[in-house]
Image (cartoon, rainbow, N blue to C red; front, side, top):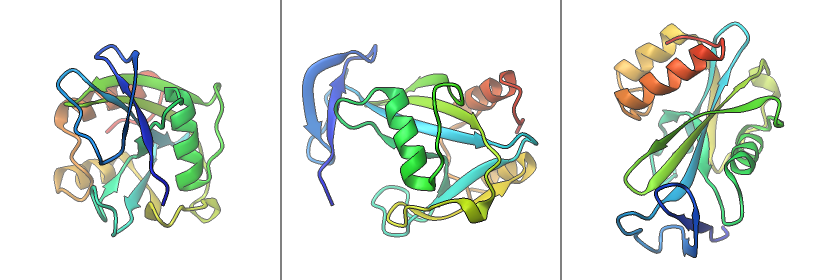
Length: 174
């Protein structure tokens, strides 16, 4: 496994000119790294979610949004496009992948992206080191999974913000 190098950002997302190695350095207060989440929504309003591999250090075996950390030199779009392709085999471009919000966490800036895509489950190409399985769920199923703890709890503020933005794009509603 290769070592990931992250750009250290300030609170506004500007590069500081410094980098850190994933898992090797604690970011100080006021330092951030870029994380991307990608929500895949079908034209009919279903969500494509993925279950993380069991041996992942963070959130093993949990259902979650597609995503990961940007590596040094990548911008948010490049990271989202790469993660979507690496983890699920879904191609995207500037016209299909839309940034819907940025959420500031303790030491990460989370850029949330959305894409309307109707790829059948059997056409997905899963990156087995990251993804155990993926499936389409209705908004009611996703809501139930969030409420009963089957889906990773990103927090009520996160879900309210993300699903409002997806609704504004004409997508599904949870």
